Image: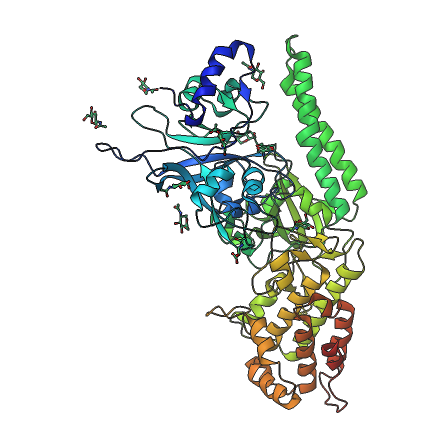
Amino acid sequence: MKTFKLHHHFFTLLFFLLLPFLKSQTERQENNTGYTCNNNNKNQTNIYPCQSYAYYRATPPNYLDLATISDLFSLSRLMISKPSNISSPSSPLVPNQPLLIPLTCSCNFINTTFGSISYSNITYTIKPNDTFFLVSTINFQNLTTYPSVEVVNPNLVATNLSIGDNAVFPIFCKCPDKTKTNSSFMISYVVQPFDNVSSIASMFGTTEKSIIDVNGEILYDYDTIFVPVNKLPVLKQPSTLVPSPPPSGNFDDGDDDDDKSGTVRGLAIGLGILGFLLILVLGIWFYREVLVKKEKKGRDLYFGDKGYNGNNNDNKKKKQMDVNFMANVSDCLDKYRVFGFDELVDATNGFDESYLIQGSVYKGEIDGQVYAIKKMKWNAYEELKILQKVNHGNLVKLEGFCIEQEESNCYLVYEYVENGSLYSWLHEEKNQKLNWITRLRIAIDIANGLLYIHEHTRPKVVHKDIKSSNILLDSNKRAKIANFGLAKSGINAITMHIVGTQGYISPEYLADGIVSTKMDVFSFGVVLLELISGKEVIDDEGNVLWANAIKTFEVKNEQEKARRLKEWLDNAILRETCSMESLMGVLNVAIACLNRDPSKRPSIIDIVYSLSKCEDTGFEVSDDGFSSQNLVAR
Ligand SMILES: *[C@@H]1O[C@H](CO)[C@@H](O)[C@H](O)[C@H]1NC(C)=O
Ligand SMILES: *[C@@H]1O[C@H](CO)[C@@H](O)[C@H](O)[C@H]1NC(C)=O
Ligand SMILES: *[C@@H]1O[C@H](CO)[C@@H](O)[C@H](O)[C@H]1NC(C)=O
Ligand SMILES: *[C@@H]1O[C@H](CO)[C@@H](O)[C@H](O)[C@H]1NC(C)=O
Ligand SMILES: *[C@@H]1O[C@H](CO)[C@@H](O)[C@H](O)[C@H]1NC(C)=O
Ligand SMILES: *[C@@H]1O[C@H](CO)[C@@H](O)[C@H](O)[C@H]1NC(C)=O
Ligand SMILES: *[C@@H]1O[C@H](CO)[C@@H](O)[C@H](O)[C@H]1NC(C)=O
Ligand SMILES: *[C@@H]1O[C@H](CO)[C@@H](O)[C@H](O)[C@H]1NC(C)=O
Ligand SMILES: *[C@@H]1O[C@H](CO)[C@@H](O)[C@H](O)[C@H]1NC(C)=O
Ligand SMILES: *[C@@H]1O[C@H](CO)[C@@H](O)[C@H](O)[C@H]1NC(C)=O
């Protein structure tokens, strides 16, 4: 049963006559207002709505990660990554990477003269310079057309769109008529100039006939066709050149429940990641995954018809090469130990749960030395940008690493930091509370760690996820910054993909994705508030600590401010006799760090200086005024 497009009956006939002489494709049908549907079957269950899919290609510059694409279709990343055969929803995509977008296809009544058309209702908010045409052809890649957008948005004037208008973009789809076909659903596909029926059929694992039955003989370039299939085709994804970045308690993962498995909530040790090391590690990986495979393939081809018993020998040779390569690496990295996978398995009793510290970080003892072992997959693009040698007493130290070949996992082995996270000291039951002078030293330690990555690495490193659970305390309760999994080198970058932890994220990053050292300064300000107040960054009612602090301490009058500070203080501190001046000084630093305008926040150098002055006044009460007031005035 051929279903021809109504508007093109004439042309279709013409084409049949001329078919032998013509290319079987032609220009896009310019005024396609959509695909009619009929959902009024009297004696059978209605076929609409149904589940369908659209084939979408990742395209630069804006649609190269699942976060933006899933936002466009109002889905979670996981809802796209699963049907698309992408193992990690957070990895960046490569141009033209194929995706299957799940849609709910329904039959929508327009009016009695026009009838109904089938589409998936996607709401899009108009941005500057958007037109129905541009959004249909670029953002939605011709999965809809502007005439159809006009039809379904009768109250919007195409020539007079306002920024912020919500328009429905009808993504074309169809549901299979179960009485006529055995296929379980239809995939909306936009015909590309290089396509023909047979290439499309093989791409989706279906027959040419079934495509022609639904769409007719003629495929028009950039027209949407519907490919009936019984099961989802398995998309060929570019090989895992870009494995997932280390997951971390990111709030962008909130919508993807499954995504959280292996998520390092809070703690997540991970520091001292060395660029050099990473490049080498990736080098090994790349070597193994790409070069060796390629070589193997070549050799198989070469020896194939000579009956060469290649596999055994090949593997041996490959192993030999790996060993050599590893030896070379460890030569370069005499500081870093290359651990054997079996050593790590022994140390953690096969990664037993009882050895789990948190997330994917295990505690293990190797040769009498205790380590924190973090299991991760690599995200080459992200991680490569970090680093320079980071090696500082206030950053958790990387001791070594291990590469496990079978599943291409990587293990980073860190110094074990005995006393757990600052978060646990502030917010969990402990039989001992931190006193003020310890808190102040912790603040200075963190500031020194940040000073190092902001000022003494080239390029600068932005941690991006400073929070109390990423601060670890050693046996002397000195602080070390952990988890550089999200860190970015290079500053003033803009990212589309928001990571970080709610309650700590700076407003400019949340709104515009602006990455700079000042976003770490902001998060540090929030940690200072936690140290002062002992309060959680977001309380049970959803109140955000930093917003609350700004409102509370807006007063000019210093006495009133001091009074409010006393109300705010952690009870544990209130019981001590410590100088109000020191407390006030730290509060002023915190408030300055929380300035909405990043350029008005103090630099980490100013902060270290001011906090050190607070430390000087921590014990003795002097009367030379508030040492950190100058920060607020900046
Ligand atoms: C397309 O629309 C134009 C005017 O909008 C009309 O003249 C033309 O006949 C239409 N073509 C088809 C194939 O419907
Ligand atoms: C619908 O009704 C027609 C005629 O009344 C009948 O031939 C057909 O089998 C029915 N279809 C179903 C699915 O019941
Ligand atoms: C599309 O979705 C929006 C929001 O969910 C709803 O208000 C609107 O009625 C829907 N439109 C159609 C045609 O289904
Ligand atoms: C919109 O277009 C104008 C002129 O073409 C251009 O100057 C402006 O940068 C564009 N705005 C955006 C947000 O792309
Ligand atoms: C959509 O179709 C137009 C032609 O109508 C074409 O120029 C454009 O490249 C297509 N967009 C995509 C993303 O293929
Ligand atoms: C029905 O909808 C079409 C497309 O939006 C419009 O052109 C036409 O004027 C409408 N007819 C009535 C009677 O509203
Ligand atoms: C364009 O839209 C704005 C607000 O939606 C309205 O005030 C204005 O009159 C419209 N202009 C035209 C020419 O329709
Ligand atoms: C559906 O499947 C049945 C048996 O599997 C087969 O006989 C029938 O021809 C199929 N129908 C279509 C439209 O492919
Ligand atoms: C269809 O395209 C493929 C390559 O994309 C080509 O190999 C094949 O010959 C084409 N088939 C026809 C019938 O044009
Ligand atoms: C996913 O894609 C990869 C790479 O193309 C392929 O090797 C693998 O078999 C696919 N996985 C599934 C579950 O389809």
